[in-house]
Amino acid sequence: MVLAPTVSALGLVVGGVGSASASDVDVMAYSCQDNEVCFYQHSNYTGSVFVPSELKYRSAVVDFGIRNFVNGVNTDNAVSSVKNTTGWMFCAYDRPYQKNLMHYLRIDTDDNFVGDKAHLNDRISSVGPC
Ligand SMILES: [Ca+2]
Image 1 (cartoon, protein in one colour):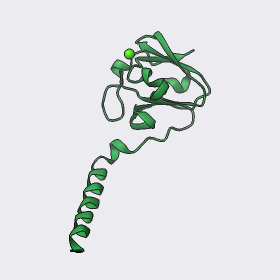
Image 2: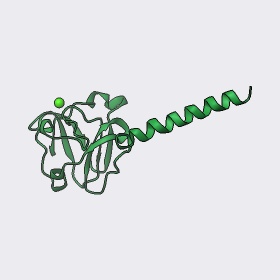
Image 3: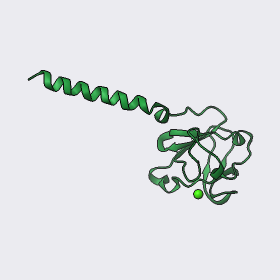
């Protein structure tokens, strides 16, 4: 009588560990380094990441449609959170080539596109200094 629930619980634990390790790469969040702008595939700074070198030099990413996250997924209309650790503010646009300004990525600021910022989720198509 006591053994049955114990075995059942153990089975659940093993199952949980198995599924977690199978998707470790996808789940493990990238730690944004100094002087980077990190675009995350999921909210809360999780999922895959896109760290464009252009933004380290205060240049622009004019078309997310031709850029991918580290996992190979296209970044256009797919960013759900952003960290800006550079000394510059950038503008995020809904359209390529910096058209349709929708949000300021402020200096040393984290942007999580949930709650009152949910309207920005999966919309960034270009980013540049502003
Ligand atoms: Ca867009």
